[in-house]
Image 1 (cartoon, rainbow, N blue to C red):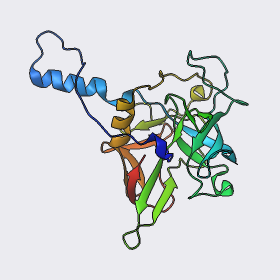
Image 2: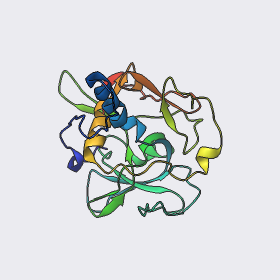
Image 3: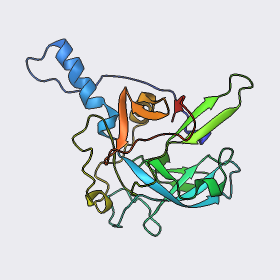
Length: 228
C-alpha cells in the first residue's frame, strides 16, 4: 500500500473455472465468478501498529511493526517472518503521517499477501488506505482505514451479511493464518478494484466490510476516495 513500485494494471477474467456436467452457459459464468471472487481468498485482519521507523534506503517509506495477534511462530510453508510475534510491513505513508500519528492505530491489513522486498526489506502484508485529490489544487490526501480502538489484533474483517459476524471468539487470536498466500497479482488487482469508500465506510463490491465483532471500518475524515 502506497509504495509506487506496486502499481500494476487491473484485470478481470473468468477463465479456468471448472464446469459441471449439465450446466448452462449462465450457470458456468456464475460458477466462474463465485470461484474467482478474491474476497474468498483474501485474509483481512486488524493489525495494531506497535512501532514505526523510517526506511534507511527510502525517504517516503516507513518500516512498521504490526501486531496481528499471531501467537505461534510455526511456519506456514512460506516462511513468514515474525519479530516478537509482530509482522514487518513496509508502507509509503511518510508524506501523510508522522510516526506519532501511526503509533497504536488499529489498521486493516491484507495479511496473506505474498511477501515482497521493498528497497531491501521484506514486507509481510499490506495496510489498506483511501486517497482523495483536492478539486482546487490537486493535493493528495491519504487516510488509513481503521477498525474501532476496541478491536483486538488479529480480529477478522468480513463482509455483511456474514454468519461470522458477532462471533467475537478468542480463536482468531491463536490460530495460524487460515488462508494460503495470495501470490497472483491478478487476484490482488481484482480484490483492490472491488474496494470502495462510501460515506467514510469500507465496502467490497457493495457489501460493507466490518470486524468479526461488527465494528465498522472507516477513515477519520474522508467520505469518499480510492481504496488501495
